[in-house]
Image (cartoon, rainbow, N blue to C red; front, side):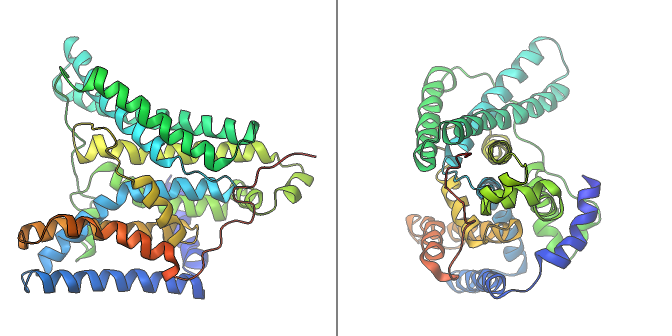
Length: 371
């Protein structure tokens, strides 16, 4: 991981931040959205939103952008290999439920064995994290088997994944999580990143008082960029998503490469799912992901199938969600339904082509048959 981070900075400077019209437009729209959001917020609250208000709102935006960014990473890894994945919502929902259930029941079991409560809580949260991510990976494997091995339409496969996850989580919630649930150990504790937390403005927003999955989300943007654009596996994955027949002629297994990409993306989506129950709240509710997987796909399109661009798109949606909190504090007279519409309105604006035409990988969604 240290090597990936070390390679990430020069790689971003040489490739990820290379100025092109499309990337400049995306960054311009993103910055404009942040400025306009703050201006509207300051106007609505009557000038009461000083710098601490802006800092806290943006820090909240980063937290709320975490599941959206992770869903976007899942989508871009899968689609870079040529496999559409609209089942991200279902993968995140299952991971959220499994993470919560494991967190509660493992903690209860460890306490029953006499383990120190603090150590039991730490162990339970870690095991819950891995269990939730693994459950999403299994759904990703199912999506890969159905869409790649049996060549079922990828849109239908993803839709079935969402329906299956909604059914499983709804049933398990009613049977095991709705009543008589033992007290859980709570969520991950926030902490600061040394040195980086002291950077003016940026430090309090990104590196101060955030929780582990938030930091992983930010780090994954760099790691995925390095992996996709600076490694042999990344080159093969992108080639499979653009021209699989040409890749097959040089001896690269197209189906296996796509399998790996889909399952890897699902594991990332699982990380976004467990954010809901291991970092946001210490509980689970049916359909609690609330469309984060679909908004993540919009962020992916906004970011032109690039990790840094997807992160920027997720942050815009996060700002839209964080404004709700500020408005509820400063303007309780405004109906809550109005600010709650903002993230979804941003989704419509972005997908309607406000940032220009987004071109997916050439073989995205096209099943491959070896001749």
